[in-house]
Length: 73
Image (cartoon, rainbow, N blue to C red; front, top):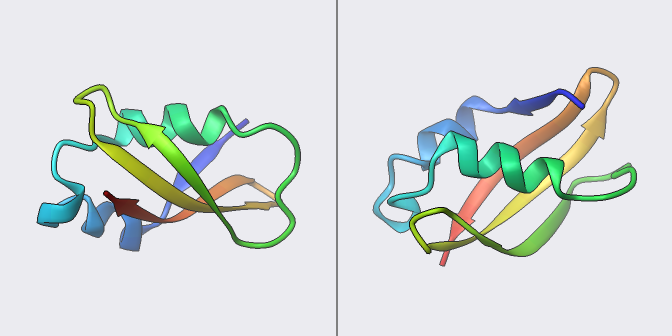
């Protein structure tokens, strides 16, 4: 499945709260969500390779899975 990370999500990766979360971590988390996501939904409890916990908001679109934003813990 194709994973699309929005510019907003990429911009948030630069914030202190999302420090040490990489694009690869986001791709792994988004691919790990089973089923279809018809509306924007928050998924909690993912861990980056650095050990940092984060949530993602994602939605399935025609072209693949859209990651709308990242929320670091």
